[in-house]
Length: 264
DNA sequence: ATCTATTCCTGGCTGC
DNA sequence: TGCAGCCAGGAATAGA
Image: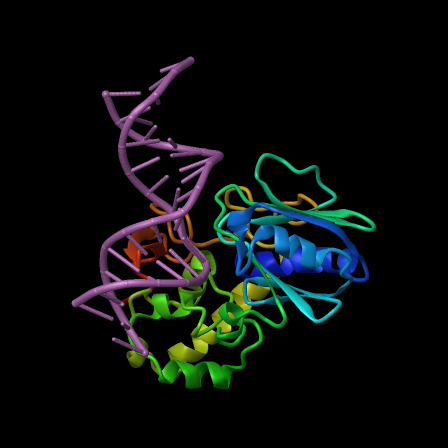
């Protein structure tokens, strides 16, 4: 599933090839498009020049000439493919003056929105998980309560973390996914902050995690999955203490942790 | 604010 | 081998 490191990897590989290009034609599968129908969105895109491509949490943000912003969220199984032949799961195709960008998404949880600025659903999110400072992280945390894992998944609190990197970060920080936010002391908060930064940065460096079918814009798989310590490791020995990794459900999400290293 | 359940969707897996 | 049934989950939404 594309989370911050996967989206960052895609943006890095695709940005140099997109910037400066002109959209000759765009085609959309309607379910993908938010706010306005697919045909009109495609018509508004025609002839626009791509000025910048960036990441906003898990959103890919494409700045276009004429003051338009195209925001792409990959959902669970979305991906951007450069110069690929549209396959059976292609949901959008952008033909450029040089090259082609294909949006592929088997499960169709991804969304695309064209607007005059960053769409509200992206603008209202919390600070970026890889850009926030330690002090701001701790300040924001102090204003919240409840279990730590659902909070880390809450994009309005912090944008970019998903299920994989939340589990990996909590393992690295030795914090139980059900730990109460209000009872995390300064030491554990510092550890959590450092863990999030370290895990995300290492994942970006590895080109993301390829669990099922994630690939970058050139079809390359990421390799961070080999560095996973808990995600998808139920029953396997903990890399730190040998205790079998446990899987529970927290907030309807599969949650993986070491019952010994991550005490409640 | 926080929590839970529900919806969207289909490839891949399980079990018979 | 075939197939029904279940599961995975990011985010929006509704209701408590």
